[in-house]
Each structure stands twice: as C-alpha cells, then as structure tokens.
Length: 313
Image 1 (cartoon, rainbow, N blue to C red):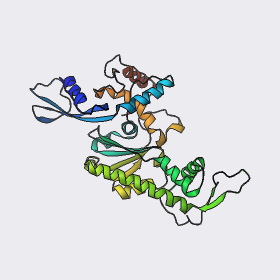
Image 2: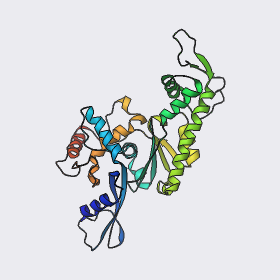
Image 3: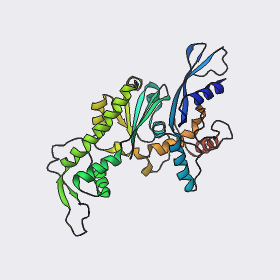
Image 4: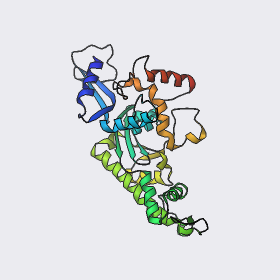
C-alpha cells in the first residue's frame, strides 16, 4: 500500500517535460489522522502521504547523463545540490527544529529547508560566485583568473576603517610580465563584492517568503559552498535574513583529508552520505536504478561506506 501511494505521487506530481529527482515522504495519515511517521503494520481504510517532491527538466537531466557517458562514466543516481549540502553540513537538532541551507556555488546559489529531520523545500537561483568574479573583472579591468584571485584573497562584504589606505596589487588584463601592477584601495573591491552578495541574499529571502518557508526554517541559517568563505558574509546574512547564521562544513564523513574539509566540498561529502539514507525515497533518481533493495547498487555503496568510514547523519 505504501509503495502504491508513493508511486501515484511520482506519476502525478510533475509535468510531462519534467522528471522527479527526489520524492521524500514528510508524513503519513491514516483515515484522515495525520502525524503518522511510519504506517508500516498499522490498519485503516485510507492512506495518505505528504511528500516533498524535487523535479528537474528531463532534457537537462539527460544532457548531464550524456556528458558523463561520453567521459566513460555511468550515472547510477542523481541528487540535487541543496539536498546533498544539507546532508553533509547539518547536525540532527538543526534538521529537526528547522533550518535553511544556502549553498553559494559557482554558477548558481541553491537553497534547501529542513524540518522534522526531512527535506521540506529546495530552490536554485541562477546567480553564483562566477558572476561575482565577472563583476570584479569588469570593474577593475583585469582577467578572470586575476579577478578570482582577488576575490579569494581579499574579498569581503564588510567595509573596514583601513580599506581606503590598504592597497592591493592588481594586474590589468593583457599586461606583460614586466609591467608594474596597479595599486587600488581594498575598499573598491568591497564595494564591488557587497552589492552582488546582497542581491543573492535578498533573492533568497524573497523566494522563501513567497513559499512560506521563512517560518518552516526556524531561526537557523547555514551558509556553505565556496562563496560562503567571503569575509563578513555571515554578518551580512544575519542582518538581511534575521537568522542565527553559521558557516557549514562537511560533518557527515569522518576521515576526509584536510583539503576537503572546507565549505566548498559540502556537496561532494553529501554525495557520500546519500547512499545510506536513499532507502527513504521511493523515486529512483537514476531512472531505473533500484535504490531500496538489499542488492541495489546504492545499498552496496552504503555497506562499503559503513565499513570504511565513521559517519553521522
């Protein structure tokens, strides 16, 4: 009965041009009585389920799979970035009480909301760290590689008293090796970085308000992804979203090398955690992959991870 209800959700919840990536049961009801976390073994005439469904364009998913196949890689399952980031960065109490996770990626910024220990919402914004890099490159007339260096080493969203006195070396685009770099005040870089990050956080707030997720997410906000390491970003997010903010790093896998323990690796670490909890889903993310049986590919991966790593949900 449970499988039949979840299959009906899978078939009716998305349009023809979209495919279900995740279908996570939030709660069940029996004969109209809600609040049932696990109906297995219970009796009743009518079974209902609340499901968080994550979908994506079918054509885009096929193109991703095709690109990987051309690299001689086989896609066994798909997991969306905001879900993976949440799996690796959240502690149990945060996911239970309500929390929002904002992952600052290169091309996109993704948002996920967890409540009662389960994914309740996710979204993606087509603005990311690469757009900020291009802002710096255009405003300072430098190459993209130089702009990325400036963002990484000097990027900040908080103006400082010494910003106009502190000078940073900037190599103009097309400059030769013998050309002397320009010296610009650090405050100029801050005035480029801050508006872009304010824009991203404002869009996040508007999306969550429009969907009613501000209340569901509680009072916690976790920032992760490479862009979350910008100086002063937690303080800016705390002011704009009125939440308690922390920077999230991979927590779900112990034994990661030092280079992979930063916020930029949260999604990758979440992909290691996912095979251990994928049995909660009915949908087969890879399109035909058996994710719940004891002989499934992901079940074998989960067994290998449990034997080789010490993990925490």
